[in-house]
Image (cartoon, rainbow, N blue to C red; front, side, top):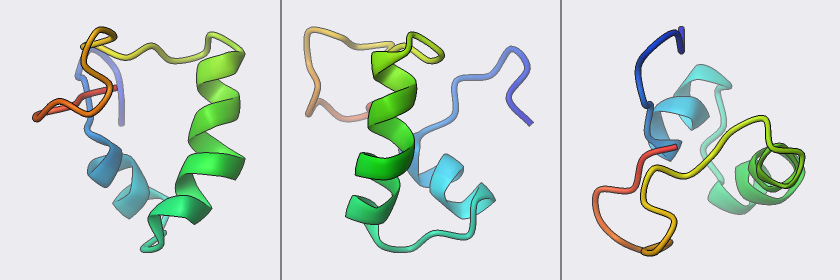
Length: 53
């Protein structure tokens, strides 16, 4: 699914069948960011649109 693309958080949530953002952010996304498994493409704008991962 991921390959060379930069999916949005919404795309990742849909792929995991999650609809509640905090359920995705805290147990899934934040640990992956902390472990360096994924990186933000706009690190200086964590709330910027469009925010890709």
